[in-house]
Amino acid sequence: MPYDDQSPLAVVTGASAGLGRALSHRLTTRGIRVVGLARNESELHVTGEKCFPDTFFPIKCDVSDKIDVQKAAADIQRNIGAVHILINNAAILDRYDFASSDADRINKQILTNLLGPVNCVKAFLPQMLLQKKGRILNVGSFAGDDPQKGSLGYAVSKAGARCFSTALARELETELPSVIVTEWIPGIMCTRHGEPGGIDPNMAASWGVSLVLDDRVELHGKIYLKDKEFIRPMSMRQKFRRAAASFF
Image (cartoon, rainbow, N blue to C red; front, top):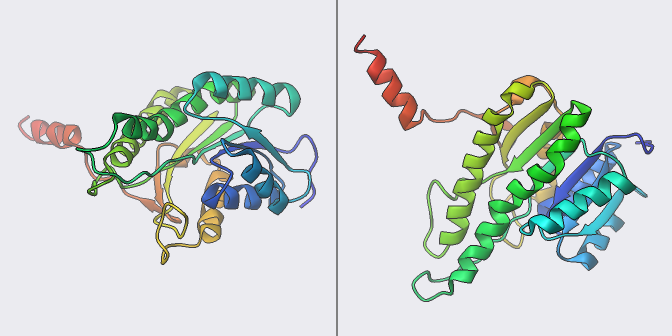
């Protein structure tokens, strides 16, 4: 699809492999310029080779480092343009025995999987608010709802990231329809962090790209599982309020 330097600009974190690479490729074929953030610079260039020509901009960045993210955001705005779309995809899954492992292994996952999205939203949200338009897609997981043995750091970080996505949507409700926030859970994929029989990341990316390019205000605060809306279970607070209301 033809594009120019006025076409929308997206930031995809964790763009050096797997789902992030597939999302970057599909976005560029839809006429979207993409800035790919990741720690592995050489793999980012491989992603660029798979994207539509001259539409992918690789930037080495550690999303767990807020200074690194802020610098990347300033460089992008100055040299490429203002960001319209942010896909928080970067994540680490490290399996270990909690009792015998070093705390740094847990902290590293929390810094990337939870604080990474926080750092990126803080860095790129001002550009969206200035334009009065933006789209944030947080790639989530049910790992925190059903923690598995050997994945404590991942489960805790993903549970926190899900809460962040919900809280962020609430915080930005006064900005509607400027910035639309949606959580997307693509399911288990056949990537290095997934399973051999999992979903093809290219298939998952087709769902994610269709979702992030849909900027209807009705999608704000919603959760999507694969390509369908997921109806959130009633929270304990909501159950309490409903029970309390029945007494009046």
